[in-house]
Image 1 (spheres, rainbow, N blue to C red):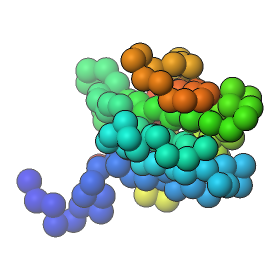
Image 2: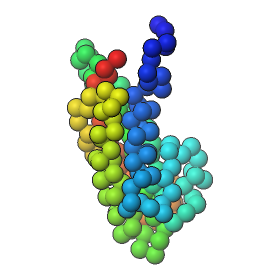
Image 3: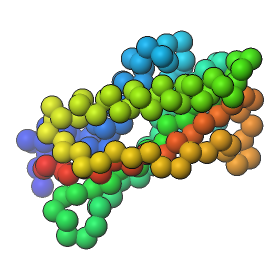
Length: 148
C-alpha cells in the first residue's frame, strides 16, 4: 500500500485531536489556562493555576462490516488551583465542552463525516493522584466515517 496520495498520513484520530486542541487553545473563556496536548508525565499537570488537557483514549471500528464507520474516544480534563478551585474547575470544564462542540465544523473541510459527538462519564478524582485543586475529567466519543 502506497502513501503517495495520502492527504492525511497521521490518520483521523490525530486530525480530530489536533482540531480539538486548537479549539481549546483559542477559546476565550479558557484564556490564561495552560492547554496541554496528551501530557505524558504527571509532572506536566503540576504547574499552573488553570490547566486544560486533551488525551487520546482509543479508536476502532464501530461494529463489524459497517463500511468504514469508526469510534474515537478522548478525554478532556481541567485542573484548577485557584481560591475557588471547585467552582473554577467546573466553569473551565463547561467552557472546554463548548469549545469542543464549536470545533466540529473544523473537521468537515478534510471530508470527515461525523455521525455523533457525545459526552460520557465525568470524573472528579483520579485514583492515587492528588492534583492540589479541583478536577473535572470528561470522556467523549465521536462516531465518524472514514472516507478513505
